[in-house]
Length: 222
Ligand SMILES: *Cc1c(COP(=O)(O)O)cnc(C)c1O
Image (tube, helix red, strand yellow):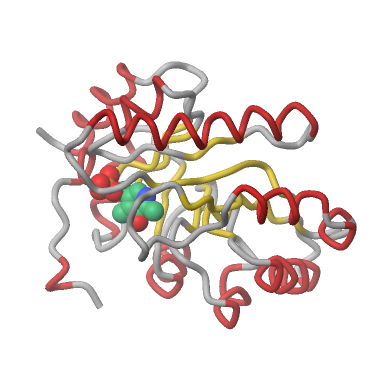
């Protein structure tokens, strides 16, 4: 199936309240343009240089989402155009985003990444750290950063029950903080392999790559 066919098929499956981020990392601009012509306007990338190159070559009405881990010294390269940063996991990073966004007179929406997987390697905050950041006077006073929700990745496993349990944990935290924080609206969870489980657990934003663009070949990645 073509990229356009994959997108059409996928959109039929997604409930109306779920936003689709087309994860285009490692894929050429021609593939992204095929998705664009099929109506897709939100793209997710995990490397700043690659995202900026694509941003410069592609139409202006695209929302660019940074879905990868963000190093503080790279924030300046995306602050002028990024619409949502999914992987925010420290106060220091929020400070840098606030500082760089202010230079562009922008307010950048951010999701706090929560650690829900078993694996040690996945980045993210625990519940206490999420609460501390949300309740911090300093964060609340940031003029150029808006925390709009949470993001998480489940363990890479075939065990559906475990994935569901991890998504339920994140969804429960999301619901609790959304109750007390009017600006918390987005729960980013679910990828090609687990988006149906994520949506059943309450996801409002799925990040899907290979089911749209096909498998990635990392040997050709810069
Ligand atoms: C690559 C990536 C995805 C998409 O993965 P697929 O399995 O190709 O759908 C989603 N989220 C993050 C954070 C990623 O790095």
